[in-house]
Image (cartoon, each protein chain N blue to C red):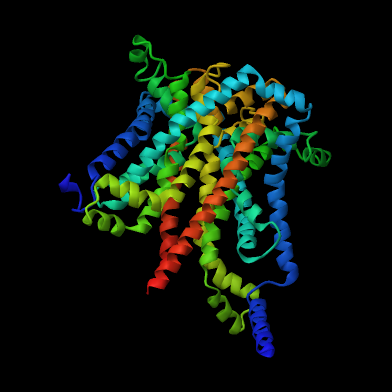
Length: 276
Length: 298
């Protein structure tokens, strides 16, 4: 053990690292490696035929497109929510603050059936939208609604602490030098908040791409139209097409890993910016 | 005296004006934020309880007391009772190794801890099917020995462990990083054993963060749908967790019963949020107390 670590008086290195590494390999590493191994049981041609099948392409477009729109909605409104929670005082603020995390705490199946009931043509919200010709439940728009719900806390929770740490003095200096409120926002606040905003956006996006529970209820699950990629994986699995499911999962995972890498770079940038 | 106070008051009011927004903008933004949250969070939450009681209180309690619903509740509790403690032990070990020592491969372990957050729940279920399913890598061997993991309780527990894997570790690592090792080193120098140091020095200082991780881990464990759905096989009364039970009822158009079961999980979510806010408040209070004590010593 000595060779791989710097000496320290604190005990328990072997035990803690040993258990952590063993458990992490057993639960995460080996099963994920098995997934990649399974997708390699397909020939190169079969693999590409599976992942580039028109039905798969349609599902990528819906998953990525709806996740992107949902993350954009959260970027704008999440920023406003974070701003209001940090900067203004109003009645019930603490409750509102706690409620922001509801999508983390509420099981996705519960969110799914609740949103479907609300946005169905006879639902509380749907009844006002259907006369206007807007179909939400059982349509791509429903997928956007579910994915917006799922990603709601991310932008708020990444921007909030950065906004709290920002020193008022800088804004005061800008104001005393004659900058208007909008100019101060655009040239001082916004650049300082940008890394946090982008991190929140990427986290919401990443979460939405893999989401399953809330979407299956509201989307209607029509192939080529409202079928997300995770659902297509489940469909392949139910047909006992393990290799096909694994191939699609590899595509989804590769995409998530790239996003994870991007998020790490953003957070690194963000913490460097905060430190300097 | 009074003049000085009011002058001071006026000056700070002027500065506040210069670094805040006009009244209308301020209330406009508050209104936009509240309407957005009402539309996406409050109304769906109200809908769950309203639909649950739509056929009356009797139907509500009948659908909760129904044997399949009970079996689902029990399985959900069982899965969480296994997954949460295991992930707590893992979270503490991983955080101890990562924050108290410097070693090669640390970054690999940290990345591995984050991974389950990046994996779609469906893929989380799929990896265990590929490993333990009848056509999976270990399937034939398991079949020979009559061990059933997929479409049985062990698979559900495994999938739950996977999706809740990072919660405790992610909460503890930054907290223990910030606290450093000086208190533990002092205790050890004074003759405390390793375990004594852990129980009496480390654990009390991380307790709020640990509880915070546990409560989030538990909420996810009891509410997980996608991963569990893939490995469960949906056998009523046997391999249905509460979220899966909701799905079955909903697809059978038993809406009141589905929402009655959903209201239990929505209640759990609200309790989770309340406890979480309480823990955050405790954490801030402890930190302020420590800061005051440090200031007094100087």
